[in-house]
Length: 203
Length: 197
Image (cartoon, rainbow over all chains, first blue to last red; front, top):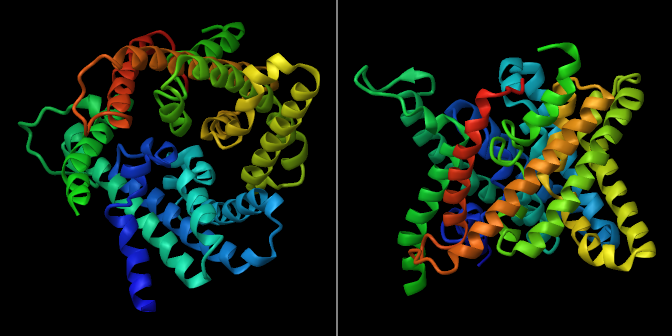
């Protein structure tokens, strides 16, 4: 039974309860860096780290927080982990840190993290919250990576900085510019809703 | 560009060429959910202008005189969020106390704004681009106006869209994103005029 809940908690955010497709949450901070696969991977790893550990931490102390100030406590916990991500990036990957600019700090305001902490970690045990946070982060990561894949491939003809398409390829430079992000995300949501959501409705 | 033109350029660029929503995707969550109606969009947009124009210089002061002298730059995320939340709370209470109509039209949107990533984003950009007190005020004001223009335009388009025949799976957020994409393309037309570095 316990194993079943754990499994269900892990699978739901990856499939029919995906935070990006179902709730369209949290795209603000990361969509801006999806013009490069590398940047997106680093950002989504940061989001996963923060989501998982802030859910875990909050769940540990959930019975000791007065409900009036819980938002403040949640923000503090999230911000702490984001600062850790920021400092680690700055120390070990200064080039990447410079490219990401303010977006690392903006993980704090990512609605998914706050949403999972509020909706799940406040009521559940630490381990389960950790799994839920990790799965939400993963569900988020693969969507963003898919967007980055399309944008970098069509926009520059390369992936991870390596040229994939031959010289015959004309770069769609609109893809790596802001409008590209909007279009790719919209089309992705459209496809997912047309396929997965319809199946889910029939169940 | 001459020295005296720089503040004007920052102000103009933050509205059009570097629109915080359409080029940096900040404030998307509330943008997607609130832009269904023109009236609420007006209220939220006005509140965003006000909060951005006030908290950005406020955060500049905090950063320059509190964080930098003590070498606490790494705390800026937490501190900026606290400043924004506290300021918004105070403003809300003040408005509620003194002006009922203003509270009804603007005040009820203020709590929503604390979680708007665009507000924190503007403050973080202000630090990275090393603005002065005056330019950070102009940058905050301009970014707010830019966000306001974007959400008003979107709300207007979405009201007309009610009569359109949109595929069911594309309806809602997806079609809004497509429209936002076209708006972003339109705003790119300004980018030849002034670039924000």
